[in-house]
Image 1 (cartoon, one colour):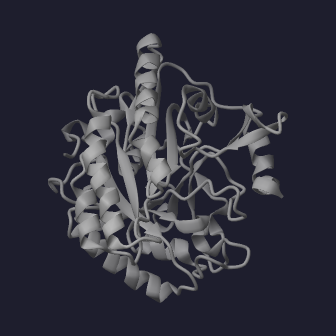
Image 2 (cartoon, rainbow, N blue to C red; image 1 turned 90 degrees about the vertical axis):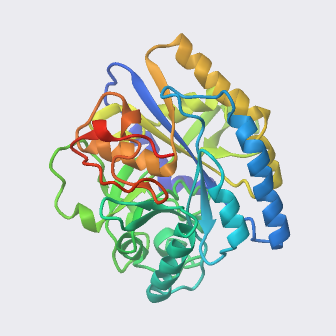
Length: 376
């Protein structure tokens, strides 16, 4: 079916039958995740020009734009496995307010080869001060799977090949997956608009369901053997219609033809992606592909700046909502703080569990979040 509606529409209907009541201020974490493949069809010289465009235009875009914590807009590049280029990666590492994680683009792979390639990629990126480290100093990374085919979930087994991929990722240091939603692909899961843990198995698409993240002081047994899945919004948009009467499918994609707007933000908020029992902390993971020139023009131009200005104006008018610009890593740190029972201002938890690899590696106790400060 078009847009894989038969897979996810029943879950969307159930999600809108009821919801947790939100009291007090809504804190909205916004992360822009970029499937960045500058070497896919072009030579290194073209890829370097793309990075140079970001180096020139990104500081101009973020100038004088700040969130509720006084933090500038953040951007997270997901760089392709096996496509390392020192100049391109070094250029990404210089961007203020930007971080880099791992994009899984592979075909007919094996678990053994994936482990080796992940280790190599981790060391290459960390060599530029990228990725994150946990309190033990071990390298950690977030990932997005190309074509949405996480855990060999494509019906024809394309774009992956590793049925126990969740386990391989978790054991290799992946702190969370940010692939979903993957509509219109059939790789889309039946679970939508959630933050949850999925356990790997020998069968494909192990992340079709799992245990929702919830605020609790005592960790659920076995959670350390599961992979955290961070989903972006998936909904029907009745304001923008196809053929004059059919609702469009909203996936949180940021493109030249789908720039962010306040109207779309309201729809993202209605998806209520949160940690169970902490409904006033909302997590909005958006996705884009800035290696496509048209998208980069939007992301680095007036449409994106106008969106950030609109958020500031909204927050100034309404004291019940506060926006926080976060990287993928910071989103997960704040999520884990909520999971551990913390409340209040989420901005203090940007480095709750994982710090940037190039940041001060002095251990920070999760029991003493007041000692934390945002990494440079």
